[in-house]
Length: 403
Image (tube, rainbow, N blue to C red):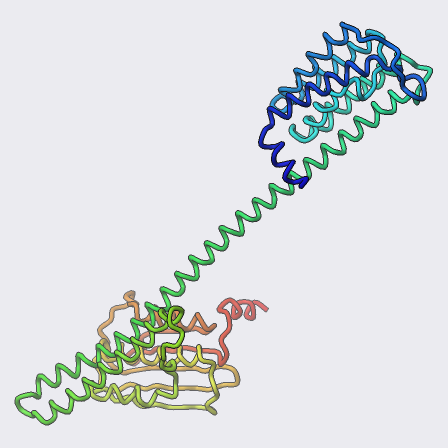
């Protein structure tokens, strides 16, 4: 309920100021008729027209206390001194407009003004009250005046702290919103790169196989139709395999809409023999060497290892110009090293990494590994990658090396 009233008051500031000015003007005029030198203030004077002439401008000054708080504080303080000069006791009720302006200066102005203007004006009014009646230092009027300025300063500081707190909360909320948006864009970008990399590996491998099989079948169609038919059957298997993998990859995008969509398991090193056999129709004989005891890999590392071997061998068929390649797997305690090498002359020029090498490097980095692709001294090309058995952030290796 209090918050609702506060919102209503903030919605109509001019109405609040006019009402406050009228109330304080009446309070000043009524207070001028009180005798505050006694323990209990009593009405002992008639309303003075001079007080009215001073109280009205002081109240009107409140209409600008939001936009010019320091100037209005000086004006209302001067009006309070003028009333005291007429012989009236200066008290908090007599200088109410000055207290309101002191509050405005306390939280609407800069901190230097807040720490300078209200104390000086309060001290001036207190000195004037003491000089007016030096015999009664603890009279109710002087006590209320001092208490009024102290409370005004405390309320102003509390309001300023609350405003700073709300501003900090708004800034923090805006920062959090921007961070969420940036994180969402970052995740979308990563997902786009991952899907593009996956599609590239699938399409590049199977299209290379399909192209070679179709070319071979066309060459053998007239002279050896039986072999051509056998290669065409293999071509159908190649395209079917490509369609299955593409369906599985695209199915990941539809999984949120249809979570029951059946998806094939992600390929791994267990399918390596079948992968190596798929290159035989291309005239590429791939031998494999395994060192160490094979160890189970996490799904991410297993898929990364498979895709790197697949892409490296696909590059051999497209660029190496050779009929043999070697795949070496070395299992260590916590590391798997994969090397794919060939002895061909190579058709790729240095400085032209291509998307295949970029994709392999990104795959290795995504699980905390590293990849090196280079020409061999004796001829040929070599792709070597070191993958952790369990995936870890790529930055972790740098921290461990710094230690």
